[in-house]
Length: 367
Image 1: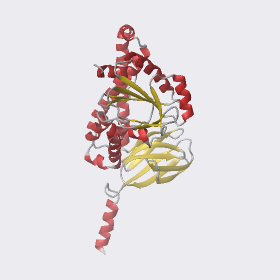
Image 2: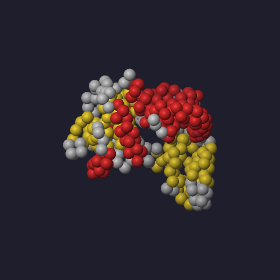
Image 3: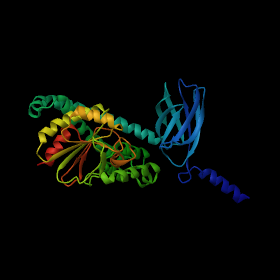
Image 4: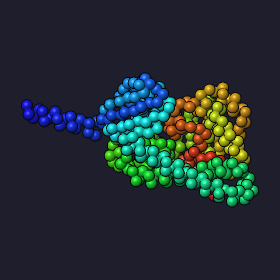
């Protein structure tokens, strides 16, 4: 009997260890929301309810047991927000309108908040430096390259900012390798760039890699590895303007610029105007352009295609903007315009390149 009691006590003490689950209590007050329900949901396509509590007289106390610390969705009535949970005693602070101001008691949430503040500060410092430098060389840039000041600042400066952000992100993850916030940050920052993703993944601790949030990052890496820089570009199943089914492949022999766009995408249509100018500049120099529409509607694409009067191959992705099939899934395309550059061997040389950044890359490859 005595042994049974000891066993029960040990189970109670260890029942919410990392091996057996993650237990937490979350308290909160929601101004302007007197009654309702608070949920913790899985942060995936199924969005399963994992824990819930009543919101009564603006307050709630939610107790839950999850498989492990990680990234979840906190829902207050119909308002959803992503949260990082890894503390036992949590206090959620809300502003009016169920906007989450702070989640006290979660080291991961604190870490992520610190990251955002640091990135904002670094970006602000860099932008001030860029504005100062831009004003100094404004006249020479305008005359030498014959491009607008807006283009110089918007795209070259943005590329510089992104490089700085990635450098600082790696430093931050290296300083916080055992915090689940670092895996969450890596998932966001890698986008569809395998080289960036693998570098951040390798900075994580083995414990974080074993958690679901680390496994999610690993799965994303495996998904985009086949189209990483230096890899052969895959086939694309497309339709011609006449409705014929085609397969674009055998990308070797020329440098390729593959532009993914859609009729309804304003920035895509603007980008096409720059590509037309670039096409004229590089015509006859070994660069081929291909525009792949992600329109779901063949009629909408045909109408936009006629309006744009493209002088190069223009086709429509057979699966439209279906993220789970074809080239969108292979390249993990989540937003457009999305431009890929291939070298003469048909391997990926760059992705997400625009305007002067794209032009500079092509000129470098043609040397």
